[in-house]
Length: 371
Image (cartoon, rainbow, N blue to C red; front, top):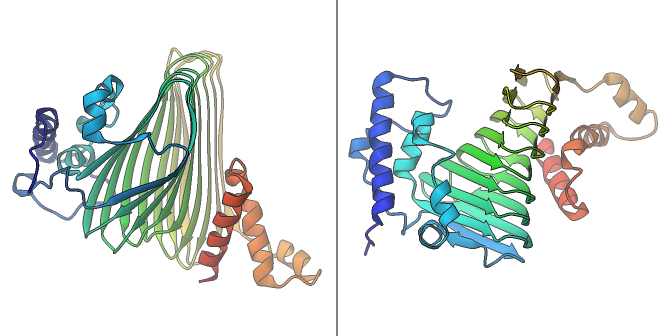
């Protein structure tokens, strides 16, 4: 028996449906991953109270995870935030997701509290759309490791809205282990400190669009990604928008590609006219393990004010034969030498993790490379 959705959610879906139809008429550019064609007016909506996936968690923060309906009713900041970051008007994907999504969860950290949380999301079915909101009140701290998995191949959509209030600190590590294809849109409003470390292990196709909005003086954001792609396709777009003075941001991406893998990397550091004395940095590095793999890297700067510090760069290449010779001359087999080189290459993006997590991720990365 289905439960009637609350009026605010139903109205949100109806509005998103209308926006989606208008965007389709205008034939705006579509996202790289296209959901299987189906007119939205004919889509039989699945109730949010009967999700197609499952969520589980461990750690000190078991009381922080709420259903979207529960959190919306009792937490004013959730009401203010819901769909205000990833708006339906942004793209056809955003509008379609807002209309179709099946499950919504909220992680809410009250002011002054500090927590560590391991969260696992399991997507079920051939098509699954999920929504997650993360809110940290003033002075709160959260370290979240988020494992994304599925039970079978299919299409997976995830929209993530993040709010980090003043003096709050958030570290988010999503680990992708999926049989299906994933499209992820992530938007963050940052008034404190926010660090995101994407770790791509096993997934045939992934597209991530991540945008950090730095809203007050002193706000900081760091986005890093470790991509280990074995005969798969990955696309990452990471952006930092500075909207206040004395803000800082880093974007660092490391991709290791093998067996004909393809990767597209795009980065943008934007400084508006209010971002005096802001600092921005981005670096993209790609290591190709065979001639069949290829990648593109496009770092960009958009600066509309003076007195800022900003830099960007990109490198791409294969393992140096002289490095391999150095290891072999010291009795180290070539496969082990490649593993050591790859480990050194990606270490920068994993340094903030604890030793146990680093060991686990590196072991998984190495196993993928050996396949």
